[in-house]
Image 1: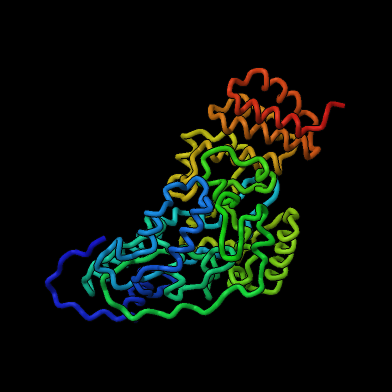
Image 2: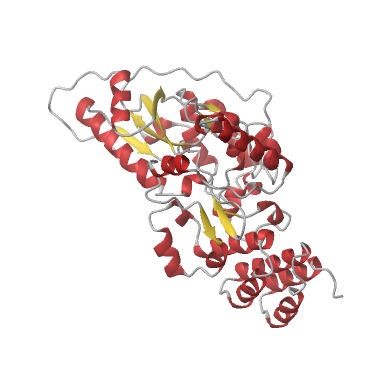
Length: 424
């Protein structure tokens, strides 16, 4: 946003005062970088989209890359970029087993766009009032490379999981920036990297990470559950576990990301057990939050009341538009459409459901008004049959294949029948 004109005498801006105003606006970290073009990042970005690694996110093209790597294309008078971060990490550990769908930690509470947006607006107003100038702020809402700008300003360094790792809060931070006409002293970038650590690359179930410090969105569980608008590739569905909105695995195994939230030796031992299981691809143990960790979550800016860290998969599979609007108003989960969440629930139930899920998936396969959901419900039934959980899945599949009009869904049903063991 542009600052209003002012006639009062204004102070000369200082980096120290700007950072103080940022902390007063509610940010945990404030750093300052140059507003010059991000030349090396632009080349990497172009190589990334030339490999189609952005998947369905086709708005990311050469023009987008050009604007996102040039702060002056947004504000011609730009002299500096103020990068900010707000931590959302805690030691709280949600329930991860049973017929529940997992949610990425950043989406447990209020929509981060609203939380950070309000604070950035306040920060920008404070800058206008004290120093004048022109300012434009972003929080994942426009063509700006939040992570590249944050790394340039020394807010953190790039991890091999492609997140920015801060010294105080690891990668559990949400980023924003203010492009400003104020000329400020800039901070040095952190001369750090992940060294020989490859835990995130090993633990990623779908192999989305790599070559080092890059990601293939087409394989990323976060992308598949939130951005991807069509059928999920069949070879990736068994690898998605019970994630229904986003994924935190590459952060959960990252030592710099988790260390700030491991308060004692017992918590650290528990985390190490989890890392070993994730690296081996084994299911996690049932987890229970401690009173201290729950309190830490409730004190977080995003978690008003009890954090919504998981979703009942049966409820999600039959989610109506009205329930979707009521349940997820003011949260980041509204990024995914209601039918996408039902699709994700069908995959999750196929991976973790038991015999009690058969009737629910069969009902969805025959009754959902979205073909993609019907097809994924069929796959969920086939997956339960493949896992040897129930022999009762063949009958509803055989009945449905005769009645289904959509060729794509019929193909999913026939594939599901092939997944099931033959009749005794």
